[in-house]
Length: 378
Image (cartoon, rainbow, N blue to C red):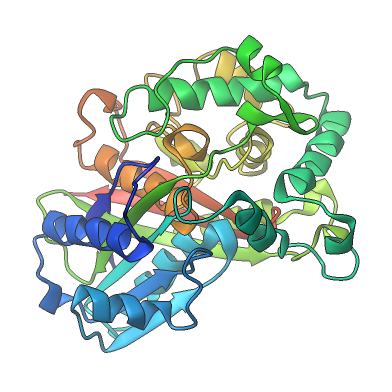
């Protein structure tokens, strides 16, 4: 058994003058304070990669910077799924008694510390070096291809996709740390400039500065414990040119494995934290995970099903689309928010019941998937 004993999160947006290590340190210290632990209590560290500071030993660079000497250190790289992959690894390390308290941390000054061209060049490497990169696609272009096919097969419209951006912005408006606080409408999304059709600017997550961290421990430290009930991964492809059909993508595989490992069903879930780099990402994942039928997720958004007071509250901090996206730390904010909801500390964002949460991360272009169930224990 492992517990998430502390979480830490900076605001996302623009942090002028802050390095990636600065942002990681702020989040890490907040997580330690939340867990009631000292730096000397940390005997394991897992660190996400950084495109701004692409050091080949980032985990030990951070350990030195933060002033800890762990007995286990490791860096992980599976794109947007990295945060949950690190959490899964920390869970296994704790359960197998390799470490007692594992610090999971990531952060980047991607907005202020990296030029637009450098960011595009770094992220373009997700494409196949022979069959894709020479043609010049960006990550939005790859997701635009998936969106076009998904819309064709399941009757989803651009207005349907816009609903997810509107919902995430509405949730971000209630969180003081979110990058965006101005409400938007479906019409605003439709009128935003084209990026990679059918995806427009407001269908895409922003570039942000920020940091996130949490501590995975063998023993609970707080009055209300949040334990990792079970998790699973699936990796179906790396490049779009090698991707399977829409009905064979990794989210369906990883969620099936996670349900089998935990004995839980989707009907048991009370709160959802789902990766949302683009509106199409969120639409597809909600349906792949069984939180909505094929082509039906947008209708559930319109009905209020995924709102804070709905039957399945979703990304109540605003997600990547509106809280912000600072690389690996972007999706880690989903877990931080889930932990706050599960421990009753989400203030005016608090949902009625978050006793069992489903988290899902997506890396690459729907390439790598991690599904995880969290459970509140008292």
